Amino acid sequence: GQNIDQPTEMTATEGAIVQINCTYQTSGFNGLFWYQQHAGEAPTFLSYNVLDGLEEKGRFSSFLSRSKGYSYLLLKELQMKDSASYLCAVPLDATNKLIFGTGTLLAVQP
Amino acid sequence: DGGITQSPKYLFRKEGQNVTLSCEQNLNHDAMYWYRQDPGQGLRLIYYSQIVNDFQKGDIAEGYSVSREKKESFPLTVTSAQKNPTAFYLCASNPGQRNQPQHFGDGTRLSIL
Image 1 (cartoon, rainbow over the protein chains, first blue to last red):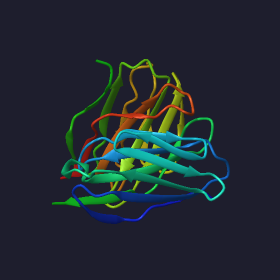
Image 2 (cartoon, rainbow over the protein chains, first blue to last red; image 1 turned 180 degrees about the horizontal axis):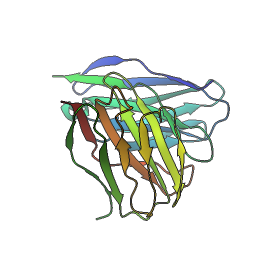
Image 3 (tube, rainbow over the protein chains, first blue to last red; image 1 turned 120 degrees about the vertical axis):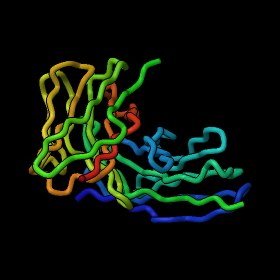
Image 4 (cartoon, chains in turn cyan, purple; image 1 turned 180 degrees about the vertical axis):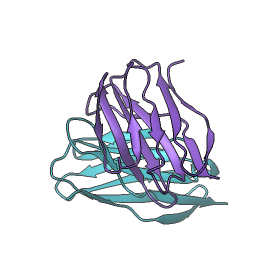
């Protein structure tokens, strides 16, 4: 079957670094997306990984290991505005239907 | 600017009533999707459409219906058969390519009166 696991909640301090993990089990692999979603708002695209390794984009980086079915999102120099849910999603097939994890609610504290 | 517009932002449904949520995009995207989000849960796929005049059921299609008569529009009807419709509904679109992210509208929050 298809399944994605993420921690439900995390807390971190302003200015610190936090790593949000995602593990997945899918019958095939077509890449992995990370989205950010503030409460009551639409998800916004953060990153896409299809090859193993680290992709860096400003304060946010995303890592993928296809052999381990594992990804993480790394947020550096945390700011209060980074308090949000972070959703991990994988396309099921060529139709680009996405299966989402439940999301990780990150609370950044002063 | 191109984007996805969902309306209304808030919607209330009476018992036995059908309601329709609007989703319009001017991104010229072929594929469109409807998701439902409940508190503490991820997004679950209701229906999707890869091309005009064609759509497919997602994981939780029961009690919902859609149409795709125009490329720009993908309205979702929540029928009276959907017994627990209270949720946040998100519409998304995608150029139709696997490595392209889905773009989301701002959502419609549906509640029961």
